[in-house]
Image 1 (cartoon, helix red, strand yellow):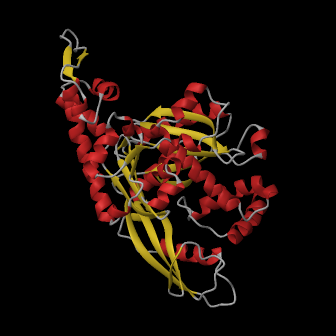
Image 2 (cartoon, helix red, strand yellow):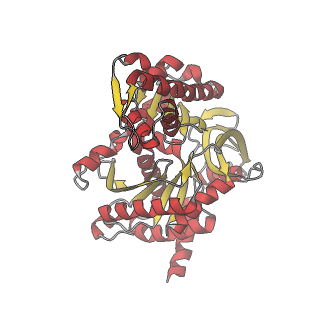
Length: 448
């Protein structure tokens, strides 16, 4: 997978692909020796074929992916073939379900295999027509009517039950993303829900334990993930984002879309009260017309109205999850929209919960490979999802490689990807080590 031999000796190289509404971003990286994430390359392209988190034009999306992959590939000196892809959009749904297995052999302790069986069973749930399960996330386990167990491996018990958080999406939307990735001559190792990815890059373990809401404000969608006691409790995707604000500015101030975007980024504020009456921005007029004067305070009124609507949607999700009173760590806001001035104050005012902006820099290792400007740029909330997809991909690799000898790691990588193709693109979150070893032998024979 890698052109240089030095990378092969250390941890595997993983690629995250964030197909967003405003940008397509490819991040190449691996885990450094101190456990942090070392980014080797980053590629960015404009996203013209995605609307509200869903692919609306395959050719334009493929074009963007190819462009971003080329930049990331040349910067990192890595040949990119397999990627971890983010998925979002209004079609995403989440539900709670309970699973149960009865074990025959009491003398043997509960193993990873038993948990895998529980998870496998959840993937067989009957979904409404046109929907497919993306993630099955175990929450608490119950062993022989003893509830609230987080990790039952090694315990004795006959009856193993678990609560599951199941995330599903529209089959057509999933297929379109996979189609775009394949047309760009890539393979998707795994599809990952974007708010789950973002939470990996900006939330600390303490926050997840205490109770926290992650709000990722992207261009087309606002993603919400609620954690409590270290476990994901609720996920939702709201079909409004930064682009909705830009459209409001375009109509409210009667300017072109590109000027509306510039006004939002340079002079935008989420609280009108924080702006002076006499601050004026002069916008060049269309050909042969007078320049236009726009009040910064009026601009803030337009932004605040839409932002309050988005926050109300988020607050509704918090209330309907039932965890409103248990969120000690409050709200962490990230994504491109989090860079809007005075946004944390507005969120605190509407919801009554503490708020901070989430930056992915805590997980990043000091970087000598990338140019300084690129490394600083990476620490922006805009890249929270991309870096999160990278972290999720690395965790998956490490989990799958746990039961294998280090010497076999490079061979296993090749074998695992063929295995992924065999099982379909939505590979199960927990897969048994035994199955991998068997598949490894079979695939090695096949590769010969």
